[in-house]
Length: 391
Image 1 (cartoon, rainbow, N blue to C red):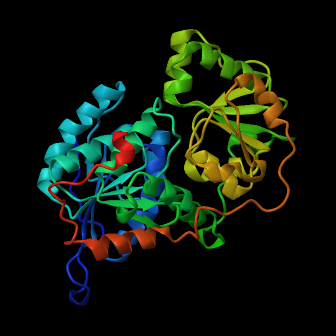
Image 2 (cartoon, helix red, strand yellow):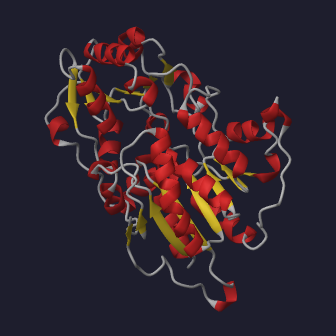
Image 3 (spheres, one colour):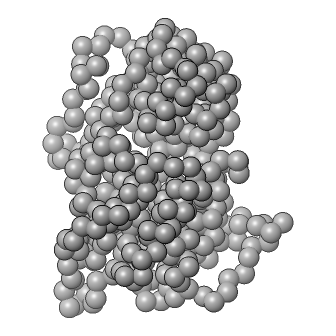
């Protein structure tokens, strides 16, 4: 575990505004770094104290360090260096290494992001020390508990003291589970982050990556990384075969887990329409996605980014935690990979895509909630268990 000593992001607030709020953010994966950027910026602007803990869940430079430099996020104060491992082993290692960090910092809030193993470990570690927990991206449900992400987000929501929901649909899910009293609608941090790098005032957009710079004609971007896809050799083989059969060139951004499993199962990542490349930095990814004829993914966050950018998405799953993306056919679910070539050949929806994820000011609302509730968020000794959970 590496500890980097640096001045907290923003030192102290002026006396007229009172003491700074102490926040510990626990992050470890690409989508969490994207959400962290606007939060870190808001906390710094307001002079609150912010400790960033990187669990090391994503350690590939293109999935980790590049986001901190590109999005101007302060370097992590602590890197737990949990690294690659199975779900239980990785979560256990994070818990062991995170426990003394929280005991030392004793923040007003432990801020958890999304639905990864890092989220689960941070939630359990903070709850064990009776530290107030705020869960970003609360209320998402795929209603498929075989997904590790679904289990993680349910635990995070039911143990958190403040549930920060990105959409009205997420608020409805929380209310159905008896969690309405702790829930606040904030909007989605993805919109904050995307607008920050695409606004003309932030400078020119990133150029297309070299492999697309001279490309002529339509192309598709693809990502495959979820355990349900990569760890089943038959399904993974079917997905790769479907990518090779698509009607346009497909550029697959190869996640480390995908590369490992393809090597392990003897699956060739080449042939037909399929081309491969490394994961892209955030700004470059947005440029490549905005110019694409479509996106193929099993990710959650990219479904949203595609919708905001007006790009048709085909999701290699039977369900989505982002039902808003399905409006007007902007996103379609493709549980059977054999249906993928037809799905990506569909006519692009006409008109402007819907805007269900807020106005780009989610971070300001979230930090305001944290500040207004500080010192009143002591964890109750007991909390009634909602009937829907015990049924």
